[in-house]
Length: 397
Image 1 (tube, rainbow, N blue to C red):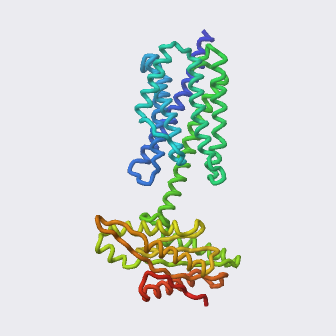
Image 2: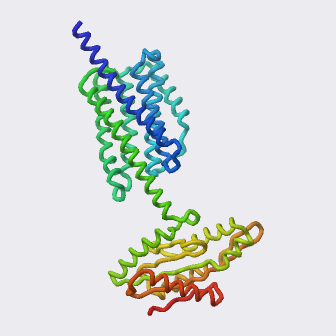
């Protein structure tokens, strides 16, 4: 009788660990649902993660209560279908959060029913429970390896959080592999078998649920914050930096070039008669002109040059390590590229030109960046008054 009570107590201990994992997953799912509801700045990967936690929680509950809520075979099929689908969604959530490439994927419902059918086949083939544990260990290990690999991609530029998760995840792979190996070694092994490795694996699984969920949410928030910061400093139409972010960056470049005695030049560009284009062809065509002009700037400048949409039809190009003569040549190339460009507005072609003001120094000597903007703006004004579609340079004092 005493041995029977010990066995019953051990059996309930394993179920308690199952329920703890289920509660943790469902708590995260509920928290994510409440957090995402009504939010517009939340990365969509968080919603995917929430679905994975919900399926995992419900699946673990069904698995722990197999033979109570549902007949054992049905509980095994439904529970494993949910848990395996949750693992699949976890991989997708990490890939989405980390912007890793994904092939065209089936829907969650398709994945669930596909996995459920696979488990029906396993039961019909009378695959022993220890071998089913081995299969789960292999599947889960593969998912963790994929996640760890995605986390480690681009290691040098990754945040400390992402590096920590990439280094920590393989630990769970090792534990999962050992759990599968132990089940393979013992044919009588079952999901509720009481042994030190089983209890350790279940406890570490609980820790994995908590740490991975917290880690993922922090990673997703980190990504959302970066995207919001980028959006705040980027012109939504052209994709170029806006005035605020450009001025901040220009000051840093100016300080560096002045400290090292390098050349620095600034171009200010204004699309000629842009208001007439808007009035004649409409704002959609005007927007298209701005987009095309931004593309011309990208193709006609170097990667080290800094482009900006200062507002309306006015743009700027800051050119590090570039003397005034070379900046003037670059400005002329841009002017010619714009002059030869043509876009369509219905059946009518639209052509436009640009006026450009240039100011640069062979070695930065002025006290601040404002002097650059003042001189380049003066040169731009001169280009407009002289008939537009031309480049004018302000001489260094």
